[in-house]
Amino acid sequence: MQFRLQTAMGEAAPRFALMTDQPCIVPQQPATVRAVLGRILVKRGVVLHLQSGAIAVEPGSIIVTQGRRIAVDRIVWATTAAAQPWMAAAGLDCDEQGFIRIDDRLRSTSHPFVFAAGDCAAQVEHPRPKSGVFAVRQGPPLADNLRRTVHEVPLRTFVPQRHALALISTGDKHAIGSRGPFTVEGDWVWRWKDWIDRRFVAKGYPSQSQSHTRDQLRGGLPL
Image 1 (spheres, rainbow, N blue to C red):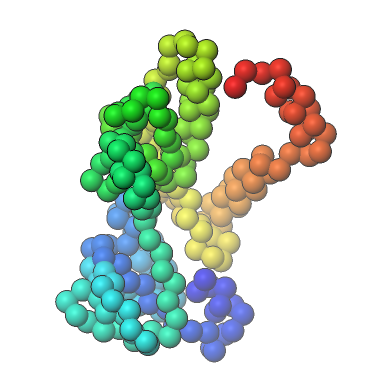
Image 2 (cartoon, rainbow, N blue to C red):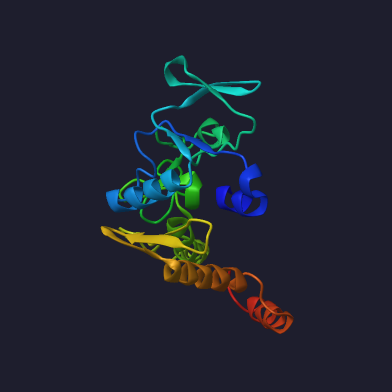
């Protein structure tokens, strides 16, 4: 956002400030990623307010931890994944954050006839961050176990990968990549990310002939 507005508006572009209740930016990423992002933010004049969780919003300002008031004209509010209250209200076993506890077969630990996956669930034996990279990997084993349930055959276990590739664009066709302790950055990383993103999106929009073929096949497949 900062890069886009700076490019479009030049000196008239608004100044940006980043507020977080965490002691550092992107705490789930290795220190090398935080250092690179920190350097870029400082270079662009973005003011960081660490350990400054928002506790109230007033016209023209945000009240953060310890009662500090920070003047703002516009607010973009970004939050972490949050659980819907109906899951716990329905009687499902949930963790401290309200996410459905599931076993390694992606079943509710309290109601084994209920399956859950993605950000609404917490895999008890293999906790992972709330990230689309981990969520999409649960799709195929979830579908497989649903079929197995219908056909009354043993379910398969699913153990998620320990580390996931993270590709963070900085807005200027430049990106930072990390997986485990390894970090890279450069324009080539952005091109890599762009290729991955476009390939992923293209998979969700089959051509008319592909869609027709899939509809024919689906008619002869079990659930």
